[in-house]
Structure formats: structure tokens, C-alpha cells
Length: 582
Image (cartoon, helix red, strand yellow):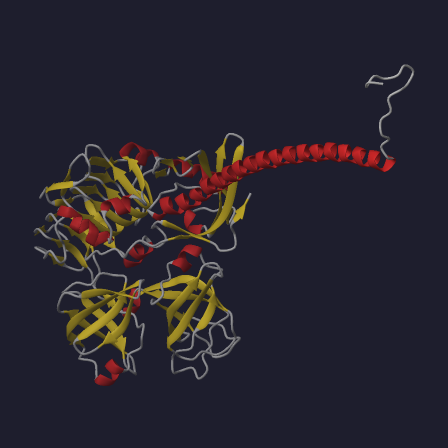
């Protein structure tokens, strides 16, 4: 057939078995399914990868926002660690508004920038909700919010609040002046003559309530409730200070004017719990089982005896002791009041971290030197009263018709009245620099001060570009606190009340007072010449001058103690367990 196909015959192929046909179909389906799965996996992997990148970006943004908010809390603590003056807020809203006026690096405490965000601070709550003074605050809730476009993060933290005390004011006399002092006409100055030891007691300083009905034992602490007292007074009750309270003979007894007195050392105070822990150091022998009344006033001992011998005394003191002062203390059984003279310049040290301890030599005991039994058996915390000079000056004193009560010290040594150069006199008086005190002060110029009624409150700093201020006619100088005048001051006013202003008048320049205005507390005069930056560049020896009639200044130890309490900087402490993110 020679390889040619015969007409009419069909070409036949080998028949594929059915099983093999099914295997081929399965293979095709498998290939198609595998492709689909791979496509899905690739798409899913791409989706996951893109989502992970978006999630990572979101996480980074969230972290950055949270970090910004946290930086707000850190900044709040940092900017309030230096002093600040908050005006007179009365609630969370007004306190929050005051944050706008607090300068801080790169903005204010209210709003500032961080990398990639703007941070805003807000006071959202205060405890108590309303208050008359920032000294009454016990806590604030602060929210820091970090924003960038639609991204936002907030954190809130509660801070406990305390208004710190100013250091003890050091004033050796009713008037302390580096320049000389002229007392003209019928003007007078009142220091203090030595008197009974009880004059060194601040009566009814705060009110306390007994928590335990147990009888008292010397050396065994007791806890008292102070909720009836002002929070500022409790915070000013320093560990190591001493108080006196009347005692009764039974758990139901009531105190009277003749009740025996016990003396207690302050161990600790708790502003949050409103309690004070006291240790009895001296209980009267007339009561077999002494009790505290259910409620009682506590007297603060301003100068409390902690050691005594025939030649020296040591006191925890709020007043300033100098050589020549007369001191008075009651010792022994039966009790005898003795006086003596401070015969050398005292040495001062801190007792712990809060109270000041002063040691000085004494001589000239009257009516006689106390017997050994009275000296060794003295009671811790016994009050020591002192005389206070009317005038202390590094210059000379020109008398008027009246001799200053308490006496005069002229040509005083630099250990008593140091030079105002390098702010030495300022620092000795306040225990801080001018910048340090100014940072917690209400700073006003003369017109602003007059518009505010010339009312001194807390620390008031009277500023002047000319360094010369006149406070004449109305309104009268009034209020309670520290008034620092940046330059020369002239006052010519008539008296409104016995103490028109109570506190410390500190004049950085020269002072001239006339009229019959009376101040209660103390006056210090530098005689400094200030430059445009308020730095002392020279001394003007023009005498401090008092003219007119009546008492110009009456020394008052209680006033000088009061004005240092709760007038320092505000201290904020984060309260554990109150942080929350929003």
C-alpha cells in the first residue's frame, strides 16, 4: 500500500482509559486551585504587610502623643519647683487661668511645643472645690493634652499641694537700718522690754481635738485631730517645735482659766489626714492622771528652751537673739522666774530640717543664779521671752523726744547689720536672695499697688523703674505680710487703726516716714543704690528718718512669725495611684 491510506478507511488512535482521563482533569483543577490559593496568599500577605506598616505608624504616633502629654506633667513639676505667684484664684477655672501667666522655657506653663505636638495644661479639679487662698489648697487634678492634627493623647494626675513657709525672718530690732537713724519730734519706736516668759507664747495658735481617751504619759506620743484649724496653720507647725495645752483630771473634764498646763513636742503633721502627733515633755505634778480635754486650743511656744546651764541657754526659736538682749525663763520647783543677759553673739544651727536652734552665753542672773536642781531638772519646751531693741543701726542714732522702747544699738557690727552690698543684708534678713523672694511675690508698680488699695498680702514686691516711691495720702498702707520696696520710700499718712499694716517693711533704698501712721512688726532699711537691673551698685548713707507724732513701728514677734507661714512657694507632689490616660 506504500504508506498511503486506502480510500474509505478512518485513522484510529489508541483509546485512553477513563481512570487516566479523570487523573488529568484532577491535575488541571489542582493547578488552577493552587494558582488561586497562591494569589490569595500573595494578596493577604500584601494586605498584612501594608496593615502592619499602618499599625506601626499609628503606634508610633500614639507613643509620640503620649510622650508629649507626659512631658507636660514633667514640665508642670519643673516650672512650679521654682517660686510662682498665682494671684488670687478661688476655684479650678481661675487657678487654670493663672497658669497663662507663669513663664516657663519655650512658652508658658499653660501651652508649649514639643517635637511634633502642642501640649496644653489644664487644672480640672481642686480640693477643696472653692477656696479663699491658695494656702487652703490640699490637692489639684492636672490634665496634659498633646495634639497634632487629629491625633491626640491626654493624661491626668493628682498632685497634693502645700504652700511652703518662708525661712525665719532675722530682725535684731524693731528698726534695723544700715544707714543711721533720726528720730524727730514726737515720733517714737517700740521694741520690747523683757517680760514674763509667757510673752513668748502664741496663744490659741490652733484648735485640736482629742482622738484617744487615754491618760497622758511623758514620752508617749499622742495623735490629735486638727480638722477644726486652718490647713495653713497645721502646715506651719514644724516638727521639733513645742506647744502648750491645758490638762484636766478626768476623761470628761473641761479646761478652765486655771487649768494646769502641759508642754508637748511636735513630732509630725499630716495635712491629708489633718492630724498632728505630739509627745508630752512636761506634765504638771498636780495631776495624778492627766488627760487632754476633748477639744482645746494649743499655744505655740515661739522660743522653746532645749538646754540650760549656769552659763548658757539653747532655744528652738522664731525670734532673733543678739548680744545684750535680756532673757526670761521659769525654772525649778517651786517655779521661779529668772532673767539673764545674753553676753556673747549667739550661734545658730538647724534642728533637723525644719526648726532653728540658737545657743548663747548668759550672765547676770536675777534674782540669783538658779540652783543646780533647777538647771538640771528644767522642762523641755519651757518658753523663753526676750527683750528686743527699738533701733539697731550700723550708723549713728539721733534721738528725738522719746527713747525707743528696748533701747538702741548704734555702730552695730557686720555680724548684726551686714552691708547691703552683694545682697548680704537682704539674704541675712530673709534667708534667700532678692530673686528668690521676688519669685514668690506679687510684683506691682506704684500705680498698680495704689489701685489695689495699697493692701499688703503674702509677699508684695513694689517695683519702680525710678527706684523712688511715694505713698502719701489715701489709700492708707494696710494689710498683713511682707512689703519689699525696690528703691527709696517716702510715707506721709495719718493713722487709721493701731496697726495700719502688720508685717515686715523692707526698703532696699532709703526711708522717710512722717505723719502718724503706725506699723506693727518690724522695718529693715538697706540704703542701697540700685541700677536698672535692680542690682546693688552703691550705698546711700542718708539717714532713715522718722518724723511726725506717735508710734511709727511696734515690734511684734507673733506677726513676724505669722507672715512667714504659708507664704513661700507652692509645692506639688504627684499622688501615687492617680495617674490615668484618656
